[in-house]
Image: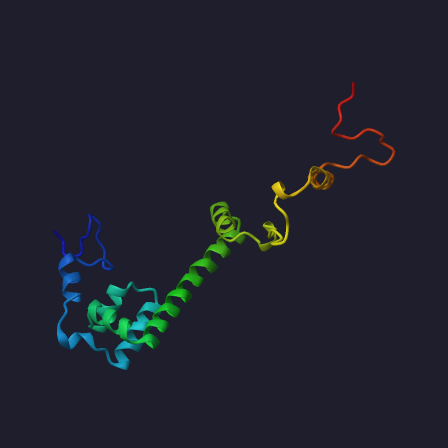
Length: 165
């Protein structure tokens, strides 16, 4: 089996199980990172490399990254910020594709980020239908119906929703 082959896929970005195990090696010297190693790791992440590839490029183990992230809040926050920025890049690319007419991108974007005015927030003080009187329910229904149903044209005595007999 090709050492780059993982689950039937090949490519330089994929690592063999042996290489992953080596990167995860828990040697005592590999669990501390210098400021330069942290910065280099963050730079590779910011370029879009997966964590394992970034570790490989810097010459550090994934276990070292995990250990530093557990103990160094500043580094953990920087890694999180890089991930957020990468996600924003993807969201921006999705938006650009949607604006260029890609229907799949438009659909995905709107399903996940509908415009704020699409959903009216319920009034926290509003009564539930069970708490309203029959007259109050009827008044709300009539108000909604008037907003939703087409209005008759001027001079038209019959509603457009009524049927002629």
